[in-house]
Image (cartoon, rainbow, N blue to C red; front, side, top):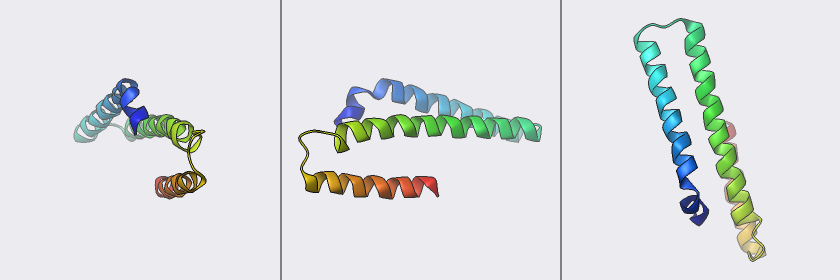
Length: 91
């Protein structure tokens, strides 16, 4: 995944923000925060993870599946792998 090596600084920033959100959720639960605050934090984390997934997915499609120099067999293998990942993610 060479494209991740070239573009990992923004991805790491997103992961670190997600980590901070998860830690805030943990603190909220430990401190018996109001249900609506907990739900809001969970929604924020979900949105952040979905954004991260969308970014990595887009890069993957452009760099691997959309590459001009990829064989039909390799493209089909990449598509099969991506479909399996998406099915798992969307469960």
